[in-house]
Each structure stands twice: as C-alpha cells, then as structure tokens.
Length: 184
Image (cartoon, rainbow, N blue to C red; front, side):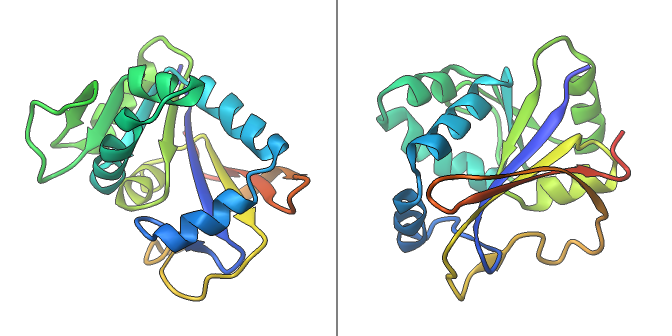
C-alpha cells in the first residue's frame, strides 16, 4: 500500500509562504547542503504527487521553466490534483481528482507504487487528515519569523499527532516528522 506524506516548509511562527516571494527568499537562505539533500531525497521517495488546486497552479507555472535533477523529477512525475473548479484536461502530467476526493485518494493508496507526496498544507490536507488518509506529516521549520500570512493548519480544528523524529540541519532549520493518531 502506498503511503501519503505531507511536507510543509514554514517559518518559526508557523507561516507558509504560498505566493509570497519575500518568504521564499528567506527560506532559500536556509537551504544549506544538508537541507537540500533532505529535500532531494524526499522528492525521489514517492512516485506521484498529490496537489491541491493552489499548489498545482503555482507549481505548474514554476517547475516547467526550471532545469536540473529536481526539476526533471518533479516535471516527469504523475500529479493528482484535487479541485472543484479546474476542468480536464490538465497540463503538466496531471490528472484531476474531483467528486469524492477521499475515496479517490483511498484508491490511489491501494495501487502499487512507492508513495504519494503532498507539498504544502491546505484544504486537501484537511480532508485527508479527517478521513485518516495521511501516514506522515513532515514540517520543516526555518529559523525566522515572518509575522503575517497563512498559518499552517489554520482553521483545521484539532489534529493529534505522534512525534516520530526530529532532525536539526546546519542552517538551523528543524524537521519534525509526525504520524497522525488516526492515520489509516
């Protein structure tokens, strides 16, 4: 069975950058070689990406213009996009998940493969957590505060997580790995 891993990069005050260029400029300052190696390893672990509409639209604009090992991997991977507003056909090697998102992801988990990775936290994450579809949550916390913006898990209610591991990187970034308590 394929596992679903959620990965989010946040500031110390829990802000996710989304489309804020200043936020990403700060994050990239802390992409030390060991952080970059971790992110590379994470990207090469699954065989497909799960994306919400917002992440899909942002990634689909950025990644096809990039070059290198990471760009080649992310551009070639199958992508499953949950959206109520997008219509098929989708570009960038993507398939639309519409209707009962939880049922469709449950089917994807049953398929043979290495795993499914979702970048960022949003409505799709909330749905998957509520339905017990998430196997692991990885939060990479960078040593700066941003002060404003969307906070991770904002408006998602209570979710109990079991700490699996922490790892500190040379740049001061810290990875927290969790397992949702109701994970299927």
